[in-house]
Image (cartoon, rainbow, N blue to C red; front, side, top):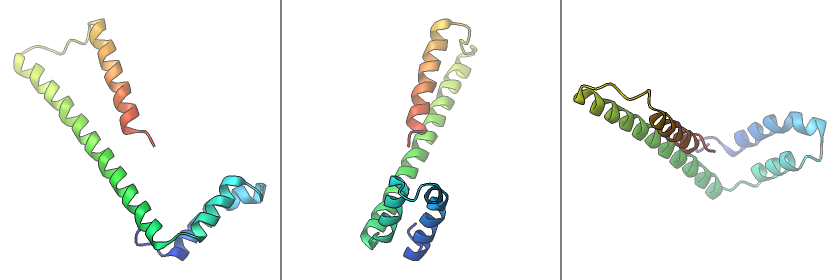
Length: 109
């Protein structure tokens, strides 16, 4: 988005909204997307690009942190010489809650 010229962004939005506008020429979302792309300033373009880059970096950092935490838990159980307690119902509900929380943190829009 940062390096793409304004005409290229307009062309991309037109391509993405073309089918919807063929079905309904007064579609609210498609017409507003085209209008916003046509009036996109350089400052707005930079702000959007910075937001998308920051969002991606934060998601990557959270995924890496999740992996590191999982490895640390595995290493802790490995050093004790015990297997991970997969049979206890308390452990299963804790893991289920942990995985659900991570799913919503890592995959939210």
